[in-house]
Length: 137
Image 1 (tube, rainbow, N blue to C red):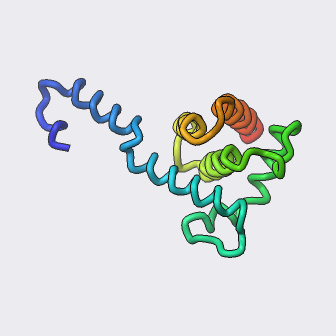
Image 2: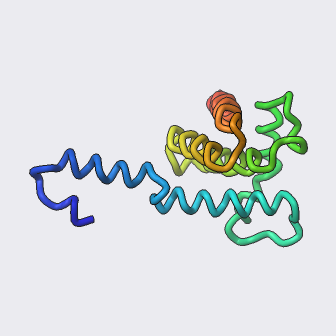
Image 3: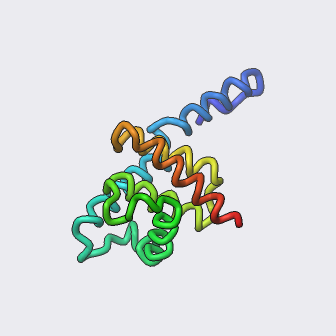
């Protein structure tokens, strides 16, 4: 991060840093991509739980209940498996409260655009908006 040195172009440098953080090069984004892939495969074959998602799996009943409550017209068992994996990760992050809510939702929408169908990003955004309202009650 040598571009952060020097005060002349501080705003330019911060802007460059922000762009790196907002792209697919961000290590947090890459980790989320990996988790989504593991959750996706777990939804088909749940015999062996990878360590990467074990904390999430422990909260799966609570997460799936929130999904069912916030998207009642879409039973969890009938949801697109990619959308379900994205929602599960995002809700887990919202419940853990370690990452800002806006970041969690933005990341989930971006992952839905990248891996889901043409309507996935809108669906994920809507469900997570409802989940957020539910969690702040």
